[in-house]
Length: 171
Image 1: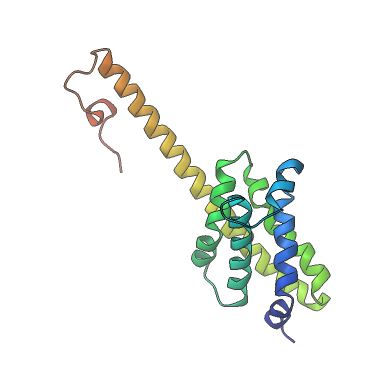
Image 2 (image 1 turned 60 degrees about the vertical axis):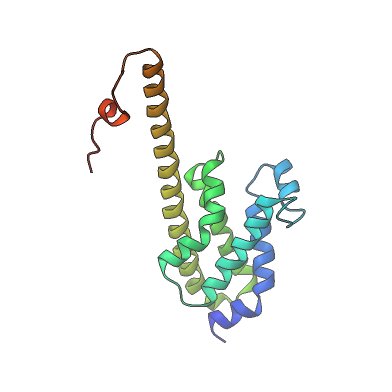
């Protein structure tokens, strides 16, 4: 039996354990709430996390590209990017797969599986950094607009546009 067949055979166990390991990266009180219900309305973060974990696992059962992996990881990583997670904490849930793989897979398959997990971790980190960059740009743009509006109210930039004040884009 090859790795993908073994993963497919243990799919439900992997997803259940990986979801729980992901939820356990949150503080204990939050983890209790997030792990209870996968209803999108009562527990949107828990539901998105469960859906994403299952989708990523299904993706590794098939052929994938780094871009498709990033796209699939996006919902969970986007949530974690706006929360108080460091980069390491935000992607740490991926490495739980290695421990899960050690318990569910034959020892001769763990090396190949760990390579898959490393690819998932790299895609997670890339997505996290893109999300943080978007957040930074949104904050910077909003700060510039707020300052421009304050200057307008004070009569200091009469007739000037935001571009006049901030200068042309340098791209």
